[in-house]
Structures are given as C-alpha cells and as structure tokens.
Image (cartoon, rainbow, N blue to C red; front, top):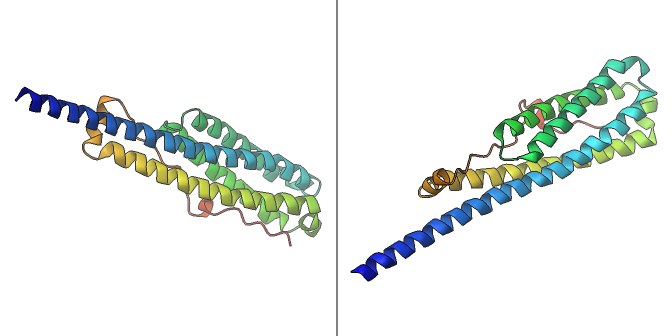
Length: 194
C-alpha cells in the first residue's frame, strides 16, 4: 500500500514539474517574441530621424508636423525601453501600444503632407527611407503577430487547470498582448513616392 502511495506522490511531483517547466518555457517564448518586436521597432525608430531630416528642407513651413513626428518617435522609444525591460509588465506594454498609435498617426500625417511636394516625393533619399520604413513596418506587424500568439499560448497555459494552480503557487502573472488602439493605426503608414 505504501508503495502505491509513494508512486502516486512521485507521479504528482513529476506532473507539477512538467507544468512548471511548461509555464517557464511559454513565458520565455513570449519574452523572446517581444525581443523580435524590439529589434524591428528600434530599426524603425532609427529610420525616422533620417526621414524627418530629409523632409525638413522641403517642409520648412510645416515645422509642427515634423516636431510632432519626432515627439511621437521619442515617446515610442521610451515606451519600447520600458516594455523591453519587462515584457511581462502589462502596463508597460499598454504604454508602448499607446505610443505606437501616436507615432503611426504622426507618420501618416507626414506622408500625407509629403504627397503635396513633388520634389520631396522624387528625392532619392526620401524614396529609399520610405521603402525601408514600409519594409520595417511589415516586419513589425509579423513580429507583433508572433508575440501576441506567444502571449496567448502562455496565458492559456497559466489559466487552464491544472496549470492555473501551479501558476498561482509560483506567481506567473498574465502577459498582455501588444495591440494598436485604433483601426487606422493598425495599418502601416501609406508610403507612395513614385
């Protein structure tokens, strides 16, 4: 009889270890997925000042738009730093989402404004930067999707039984998906300098 009790205890311990390891693996997966977003957003944030500098000469009287882009970019950079420091912090991820929404809106206004300047549209540097930015936006969208899928997998593991018991015992907190607040901001900025 004691052998059966011992076997049951060993099986329960192995199940507990398996669930714990699964939660750790899922948490690491969503953190890695966020690191991929971090790389793409940092690349985009590095491109934006060059884009603004190129546009400055043509859009001298549109200084407010250019400053809004830089201010939104700086907000996105600080939001990215906070979220990258701890992707499991839901508040930091939501702050990043808000900053990304503002940046997408200001970039959209910049590109709409640039449409009115044929010389700017034809500028080789502007065309190259716009193409790189569009490519990076696509990579960000794919990385965001992979991150959100990882977050869903992690949250599912920590919320279903018996994982919820283990998650509660070892303080596995829920992860927040990276969402863009408005439907217009969900789209990559329209870039058309042809």
